[in-house]
Image 1: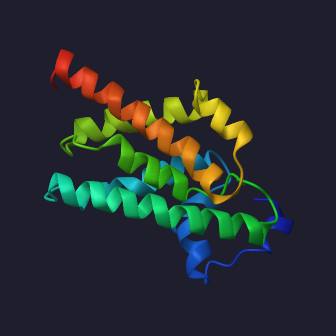
Image 2: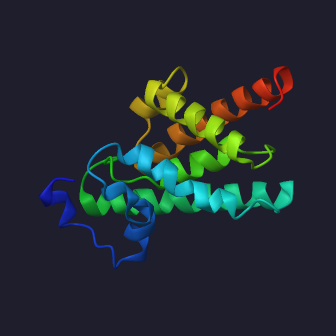
Length: 161
C-alpha cells in the first residue's frame, strides 16, 4: 500500500482492522487473494453450522461489510483500494452457501471465486464500474461469490467430489 494511504488507516481501529482482512489486505502482492485466504479459517469454523446459521452469518458479514468497506475507503480517501478485502471475505462466504465445507470444496470454491472476482464477467463488471461507496465495494464480490457458488453447485451435481 502506498505510504500516503497507509497513514490514513490504523490497524488499531477495529473498522480498519476488519476491512483490511485482519491485516491480510496489507500484503503488497495479490491482496484480494490473501483476503480470500483469510476467509478460509473462518469458513472452517462454520463446519458444523446449520444452513440457516450459515446464511445468517453470510448476510451479517455482507451487511457489516458495506459499512466497514465504505468507512475505510472514506478514511483512505480512495474508492475500493486493493487493501480493503472484507468484500473478498464476504464473497467467499457467498461461494459456500449450502456447500459442505471440506478441504476439496474449499479449494474448488476458492479457485472459482478468485476467477470470477478477477475476470469480472457480466454483470460483475457493470456493478464494479457503476456503483460506489460501501455497497459498490461489496456488491461486485458478492456477485462473484454467487456465481462461484452456482458453478460449484453445478460441478457437485455433475461430478460429485
